[in-house]
Image (cartoon, rainbow, N blue to C red):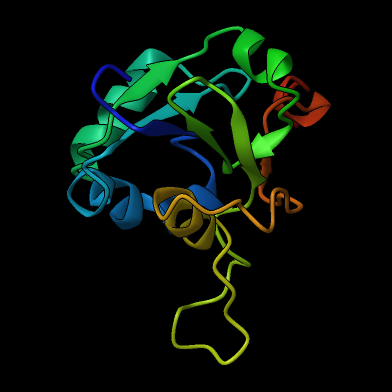
Length: 151
């Protein structure tokens, strides 16, 4: 975060179907918000570094991704699904946590952005009005990820 006004941390997964939708947004984040750092944290149970590297190459991802192999970071941040975003100021004060948006397309009449308004308010020196929203998406840990495959 050196030289940045804050950061966005997004818990993300290479295999989460919900995360795929945000790949262009995250890849363009540094250009749109040069004053903010961005990092994606891949914490999904069983997700390997090779999977993440392969996905990043195939989908031409340009945002930094950290591999949280044992999901410890996700547990410490009380995060149970991907995607989940956190906006922090330069002092690492939490300003917003939750969904990026309501998982509608921007042209949809019911579309609601959550992260971008929080970023705009923060960058304008205003208090963030909506500090938390419910997240949705793929579970980071699930018994279904470790059950044996059917015969």
